[in-house]
Length: 514
Image (cartoon, rainbow, N blue to C red; front, side, top):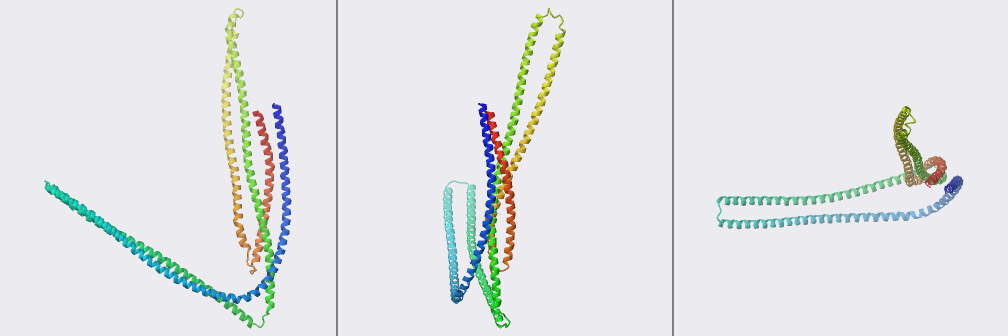
């Protein structure tokens, strides 16, 4: 059975090694295919960029023709637009006047409504206070009637003068108390009225502040409209002055100067279109490479986690080997204990057989000196062996203590290594998250930077600079990608033997258990 299990385990080990070799070959083949696909992709991207540039140039020429045709239509529809603008301005003015009048009426109605609400609150408060006063007066009248009734009953009875005086003082104190309560109620009523007036004033203040803000907004809108009108007037005045100067200048070249400027503008626009196409292609290529780099980082994070599991398996193997070593030592000690027990039993049997043998052989051996001497030597040797055993046990205890300390240090070291690997994997995950956030928010900024106006010639230089920066960043990403691919390749080559070793260890452990 054991030979069959060993042969099965060896066969499984060979199969695992073959699978590991095949996996490594497949990984290398996949890396080569990926490099070839990357080269083909670069070629296709360059061809696509040239074709897109050609199409953009054709598109620009067609757009120029369409613009020339549209200018004719614009010149005809300009007068219609001017009339529409005048009518719209008049309608806007009338609408603003109506809105202003409507707002004034609404504010007046709101003021009246707030005044009516304040009057209603005051009347409700006064009604409430009067009701409270009436209830208080009724309670006072009832109390006074009860007191008079009690006084009349007590007068009929035989009472002493002291009790009557105390009763009179009590009635006076109660009357003073009632007057104080009335004053307190009046003060409370006045306080409530003041609070109501304060709340009404606050509401009025808030309303006035809102009206003030609305008026300020209207003033700001009027000022902005006035500034815009002034700027438009100044621009029109400048255009008029420029046209008058050109009309009065006899040395002006006429249409030739404008044609030269138009040709230069068209050339700059063509250059701008080509630069934009190249920039967009480089940006797409950069986004693609960044996505690939992010995937590589995720793979590295997974490999680091698997490497952490490898460290756990190595620690488990080391602990198993130490456990086997200790079990072997325990078996050796048990064998020695058994041998000592056998020796002890033999010695006891010899001691028991000594009196009988000495009694039987007393006639034969006359001298017992030699036997006593041998017995003393035996006792001395037993004492020495006992001391040596004690020293040996002490040394073993020290060695056990040192081994426990070493195990504790190894455990701490393993925990620190595990924590380091966890930190590395978390760092890699955080880098991946940072790259995802950059990829999420940076394209918006890139799109804002791509769309410059065609009329501004200085934007070409900025686009060229941005193109150079994009190329540099692309080269850096390519270098990082190459380094990452090499690292992943090495980690994969290290990982497959690790898996094979772990399989061998698990198989050996299972065979030992069998």
